[in-house]
Amino acid sequence: MVQNASVNSPAKATTDNAASSELVKGLGLTSATTLVMGSMIGSGIFIVSAEIAREVDSPALLIGAWLLTGFMTITAALAYGELAAMMPKAGGQYVYLREALGRLWGFLYGWTLFLVIQTGTIAAVGVAFGKFAGFFFDSVSADHWIGYHAHVPALRVGPMVLGDMNVGLNTQNLVGIIVIVLLTVVNIFGIKTGALIQNLFTISKVAALLGLVLVGIFVGRNPQAIAANFSNFWHNAGLGTSHEIQAGVLVGTLTVLCVAQVGSLFSADAWNNVTFTAGEVKNPSRNLPLSLALGTGTVIALYVAVNFIYLSVLPLHGDPHGATVVARGIQYATAERVGTAVMSQMFPSTGGALMAIAILISTFGCCNGLILAGARVYYAMAKDKLFFEPVAKIHPKYKTPVNALIVQAIWTCLLCLSGTYGQLLDYIIFAVLVFYILTIVGLFVLRRTQPHAERPYRAFGYPVLPAVYIALALFIDIVLLRYKPQYTWPGLIIVLLGIPVYFLWSHRGADRRQA
Image (tube, rainbow, N blue to C red; front, side, top):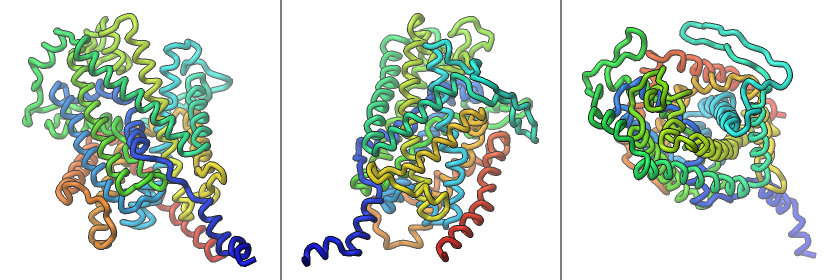
């Protein structure tokens, strides 16, 4: 009788209910590392080098732009490692900002993440999957509309051009929506299921990138491109060289490298997604810092190597009206698809198909990682009464944030239909950098306010490397604010719009707690 009373006691029942409502630790070091790498590698590495090459107009500076991105990404990841090991909770960066700078800053990050950063990226990657699926299926196209669609006219607001897009359902964004819904459902069925897909596709796309590098070294070298690029490698790379970034606007080499970071930083972004899943990582004090270091280091090394391959296969300079792949060069690769141009040069008959397959694998795995991780932030916000309360619900059987995954999928699919995600992504790199800066500032704050807190891992190079990151990121944001206002002010406005929303939600949360 005593045993039965103990088993059925209210205290025991409460404990069991609390335990059953928590996320489960299903991610080991391998899964955490593939989440870092898989979230970073999308389609950007195959595309953005064209725009960077036009901006810097120098083989050395093309590599320099990626090296700068690599330095900043790895430095930030090493700093985040300390925060992740110190606070291994679901929500990651949202939690760090909340604990270091206050609930408002945490909310503004989560607000921007949901509205634009995470969902816009998922939408873009999902539709990119549909775009490259069209390589094999002619019926999958942005021009094949299903039912009614409308055109939103261009609206110029200062330096920004808003609108100028088609809204509705076409076969291309339909494929993207199907991928998003499919991966959302898969991730509802447990963290281990999502992690398995992540591992398989990350290994596949890392192998594809590594294959591109090896084939480029041993098979694809083009003597014409090597002579053009490496005999003049330092062309236009002097610190005193002037670069034209707009009609009549000349800037120095350091400034043009910062301007070029829009593409490369975005292509290397989302490495922080593993922190969102911290509550589900086994031995987080060891595995989170290690996965951040291993994942970012591996991807950046691959990115730099891939750009050297680009330079060994195609000349940097080209003619926008060139009749051949070589004539157009890296700068004017058709539709900016540098990866496809390189593969077509190496394998004229099959190169395009091989690259399309590689990008399909890359975008599918990237989409899965972003879906898996992003939902954990909205779950953490809902637990803090700063998001829709049902989003804090955990699936009773699979222990996943089911409602957070569903809400994320709904908003992402609407962005796919709206056609706005492309513009939204142009706007976010400024805001992303602002939150990275604030989070690393939070590292300094927590060292001062919580000096005795347990820190299983301490940021490498502290305080010098984190301070260098803050200075560089601030300089890049200032340069973008000055020279690329169309990419900065909209992102800043989106962040600021979250302030009244925060106070509204905080007020509602306080009312619910009093009730």
